[in-house]
Image (tube, rainbow, N blue to C red; front, side, top):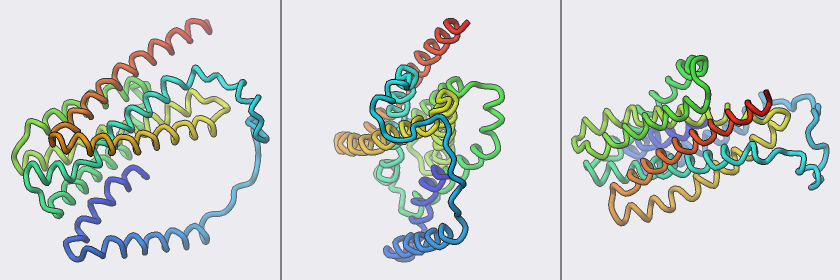
Length: 254
């Protein structure tokens, strides 16, 4: 849901910018006030309970965590967040320069892509998880994203890029919850630690990716897309490494 908001928000904001450049800011402010009111009225503190996690911050307790379990997933999270954020951030500029998309055109493309991505998450993600493991699903989603990104580079017409834009975000939207699921499955009793690690490396990728993509865009408008393709392929390699590592751990347990 959060990821869908990140994609739909800029699209809806683009429609509002057609009316007034200030309207998206007014709308965002109104939503912030609404979120505050709903948080106060509807959200209540849960019953406080603890599990076998840390009762207080004691550095020596960190030695109890099997860090090796989280190294490859953390790297995978960083790499994917880096590549995905790089593409999503530069998408508007890319389409504007390549086919002269107006803010309205960009809004239609982003909103359409966000809707398709959200629908696939809601109706198909759980079904896919019944037939594929998280790692296998991530690998196939990355391969799908690479194919669509290559088509985006090749395409040069208004409607061709518009159609590709509707489906390019599907792979990205499916990857994120799969990574979250995977972290949750390997965390055991360390759900809070795994969630924090996931958020940390995602934030790092979201920060670094747009910076490098912006610099590459100044060199060539296709360069950020090539980078996203390369990062996605690197993600597939990391997934294969992690699958081999998991297989070895299972054999050791037997």
